[in-house]
Image (cartoon, rainbow, N blue to C red; front, side, top):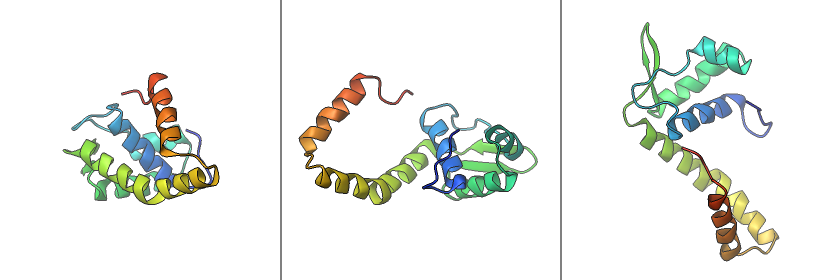
Length: 125
């Protein structure tokens, strides 16, 4: 995983787990990597993963089964969609629309770009 400077690492890790749920890498009831496993694989401090998992648990994406580990919660896909849509609506789209204005791009221009993106494969599930 390549971390970006513009977003806290623990939030990027939460995004990574959320992506795994949205892409059906992990389904409801599946075990997600332990704090230690994920910290080792991403080469981060375990406390960073703990913070990510706490955030995900608060939002209903994962649940901690004491003594067993973390699992994808019931309704996690819908919760992940809600979290991601909220971020898109309030954080990502304002910058996107500003860029559109600066570049004098129209919604029609963007619709064509989006169609091309989807034709090239888009997001894989």
